[in-house]
Structure formats: C-alpha cells, structure tokens
Image 1 (cartoon, rainbow, N blue to C red):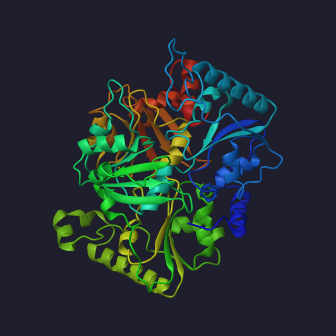
Image 2: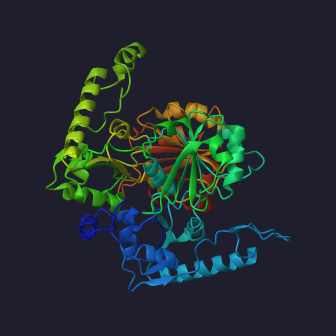
Image 3: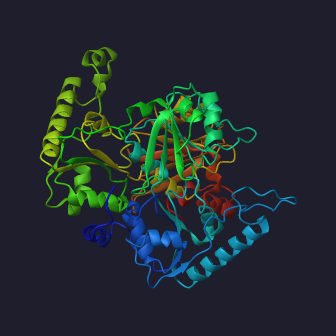
Length: 560
C-alpha cells in the first residue's frame, strides 16, 4: 500500500488530463455515475478525478467526501447528501403487505419519494447547464446501489465512468492470477435460476468470488456441502484500504468450522484451486532490500490508470513495460529507465519443454519453449539484481494484471522477493460502463461469468450473464458455442475498444442476430462479448426500444 497521494502524482494526473486524455467537457449540462473504486482515494482513476473536478453538483455522502479529500477539492461545489443507496423498489409497484429486507431503512413508498426527489434535483441542475455526478463506490455496475439512476434519467443521455471493483482490489491483495471467474452473491436463487452456489461449485476450474457474504457462517455452511472440504478458499476484508486490508487463506472446511476473528462486514470470499498459487502470505528473503510491483495500468485511454499506479511509476527506479504502454504513457515515463521486450512471457512458464513439444502447443507461439524459458530467466535475473541493490522495480501491464493477465506469472517466479500488486481497471469494468447498466441485475441470474474462448461452451451451461474475453478468437465460434445453451432471443452486445473515449463502440442485439449485426467487420483484439437479459435494462436499449419499438445498432453504436 502507498502512503497517501503525492503532489507529483497529482501533477502527473493533471498533465494527462491537460493533454486531453479524459475527453472534452460538455458545454451542456450532463449526468454521470462515477465509479470511485474501493478502499482509498488513490484507487480513483484519472478519468474519475477529472469528472468530479468538472462537476458543479456532486451527490455523495459525508464519508465519501472525507475519503476523497486528499485527491479532490470539493470547495465551490454543491455537495448533496442523502441520496445514495436508495435503489430499493425502483421501477416497481409497492406491495400491499410489504415485508422489509433487513437492509432496508424505509418503506417502499418512502424509497419512491426519495428517488423522485433525486430525479427532480438532478434534472433541474442539468437543465441549468450544470454537470452533475453521482459518486458510487467500487464499480457501479457490479452489485452497485446507484446504477438505477442511469435508467431513471435515461432521457438525459447519462454516462458511467468506470471504477475499480472490490474484486480488482481483492485480486491484488491475494496476489494471484485468475482465469475463469464467477462473480456471485449468496442469494437464495429464484425459480428458474441455475447460478446458485451449489450449481456454481460444479465448475471446478472456475474461481467463485462471492460478494456480500453478510452471514459468513451460513455461506460457508452452504459451500461446505457443495465443495470438497479441502478446496482452497480465501477471505479478503476491506480490499484497497491501507492499514485495514486483510487476506486470510484456508480451505472451505476450515472456514466452515472456525470463522473467529473474521470480519464479514466488508469482505469477499474466494473459492477455487487457483488460490493455491496466491503469493500474499509468503515471507521474502531477508537479504532482499528493494521491492517489485506488478502494476495494472487499465485499458483504453491513459486516464483509466489510477493515482496509485502513477505514484508507483513516480518512485520506481526500473520499469518493465511493453511498447504500447510506453507510447501511451510516454509523458509519465519520460526520464525513467524503461526496459522493453519482457511483457508477454507467460507461455510455457513452469512447463516441461518436451511435454510442450508433444502437445503441439509450441507451434502456436512466437518463440520456442526454450526461448521463452531463457527470456523468463533473463527477466527474473534483472529484477533480482535490482531489488538486491535496494531498487524499486515495476512491471506495467494493461487492464487488471490478475484477470487473464500475461504478467501474473512474475509473482510466482519472484516469490522470494517483496512483491505488491497495484490493482488495475479491467477491460471488463470499462465495457460494463459503456453498457450503462448493472451486469449483476439479470432477471434470471444474479451472477456474472468471466470466461474465454477455451471455456465458453462449458461455462455457458449455467445460463448466467456471460462476459467473454475474446482474445482474437473467431466471433462466429463464440456464437456457435453460446447458442448451444442460450436461446436465440437472449440479449447480447459487443463492446469494441472499451475505455477509448473517441473509439469505444457498442452494438446491441440478440444472440440470434449478432452475426448479422457485426457482419463481415473484422473486430479488433480489444472487444468484449456480453450475453444476458441484464442488457434489457441498459438506458440506451430502453431509449431505442421506446423510440422505434426495435433495437437500432447503428444508433446505439453512435451513442444517439
């Protein structure tokens, strides 16, 4: 963790913003939900900082304002408290015999009244030409309490500024690279849902990440019935909060038997065999004086990097980075010792080359297994030498370096050193914001599967919301695999170049129409494929359906 936000970091952020990487401010009034990340203020992205600085009206509570005070000057802004976490019953009729949820502070009618008050205040400010923001903790699209405001104000053409999720911060706390992931919550499943904890446990290759385990004991009792008791598990509390963050590694059986000393209030549970590779609990060799950072730099434009990432770059003595990141962050890296050529070195790590030859995999890579091993050893030797000299070393990686990250292997290789991970915004978070709706708000599913081409068909059997990291896989191949488990009328969307303010594009349709929507267009490496009925709640989709009775992908792609 970092000790506060340095002045030079803020200056670096200001430089990026001045260069126009955050997009031009709108001349008319506007409304945005701004993801402020979990934990400390230095997990704000530069884009979020800019959006808040430009805003004249800010909806946030006093606790959030105090937390962000080190990065944001709120003087001169109209700060309005009292309208966060009022999502209950939005868009629903109030039941005659209401039974309140334990977390509800008001009746249905009172929530409707507060929602109407908020909408009136926001509309009035936008009509007066003011820029209005609602600050939302974490990633507002993942179990976020404020995403409803985009639907309520859909006629104002609102936007979402992506934020890091507690999931991104918890990944960094555990220091473990993840492949297939299922984000879920321990709700009792509705009729027709197939994504209960018990069903998810059947997919042993996936890491299940459980948000909001308010009754920790009850959650682990369920997990102990669904998983072998020796299945690795972890609990991360207060992810992203310096001095308060805590990670505990164990097994499903051990946690079910003893949860003493565990704070379930701000915790996330991880379950899966990938946790065997978690590096957070290691003890560095005593003779290692420096430190190694794996730094997530976010997707898209440079303003999706965090203040914490900027701080690490500022203090680093030696930086490893790929050519695209060097170009993107040229101003920030100026004057630093930067080494290229060691970015994508994960192929064959820890593998026997003879076995790789037999499997035929080596023919798909740009180097032989032996050449990869040689480059991995070169990288490790340079890092160890620098750390032994007391230097701070940083490896920069795009997106979240621990979600399909090509550099996560370095944490295992350098387990004898003092290492730390700076969480980064994933292309998943950025694409969620482009869709402007909660990915966990499906009618038939409350879970989200993060998968790749290798696991798409297997994971789609759950019929949860599916998010595919496409990685140059054939688009038709994805559609064919998904169509085996999802009906052709299932809503679908493609987000191209998520996070690039001037290039980001959304195409909406259904699983049965997406091939025609995309047509013969050659999609770039940077695109995400979404499948799930949560898409019906997208403000853009609502607007298009209301206006014409059908979805017009051209209008949606252009943001009209």
